[in-house]
Length: 106
Length: 120
Image 1 (cartoon, rainbow over the protein chains, first blue to last red):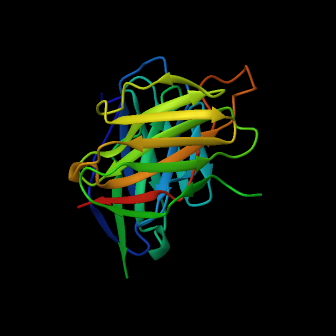
Image 2: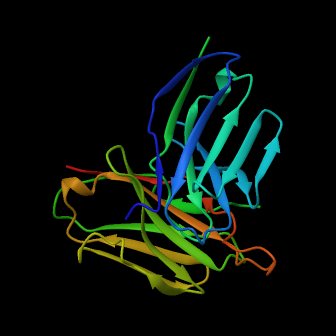
């Protein structure tokens, strides 16, 4: 059952770059979405939630495109510490995408 | 305040043995989830409870897996008998019930540190 789909990557970007990930969802009734971050050998933790068109928090911007049924996560000015796996989830389901791996290179 | 607590953190067992994973959710959270994570399949939902009642166990792979939640502060996931393909990281997560009716969807899930299971 694939409620959400993600490009697994890996994305390897240089420090300071801008990178974006997409996550497509199948349930058009979904009204909220979440991006989680998972560091290596750690548990997922909430990064951002999206309830309407978008949400911005510092270098991170999450956007929702209902017409095309996808959410995106944009990271500006990438830091080495941004290296992690980013998981998306539809709010009214409990299923996560497979995650997108990001490595920021010095 | 303590987060979600899981035990053991690591478990190594032999094929055929019974394995019991334990979870204490965050106090006051109404939802409890069990997930399994592998490189091949990602983070899979196994089962979730609401107010100690199992709501959806369709993700439980087979009858060898069972989960219980005898009270609001404790849940177990049992595998009997265990097989090498059960090797994975098992996460427990809890979530409060959404109170704000103006917003659809569910709240943030808080994950425990996971149990890394290796079945030889």
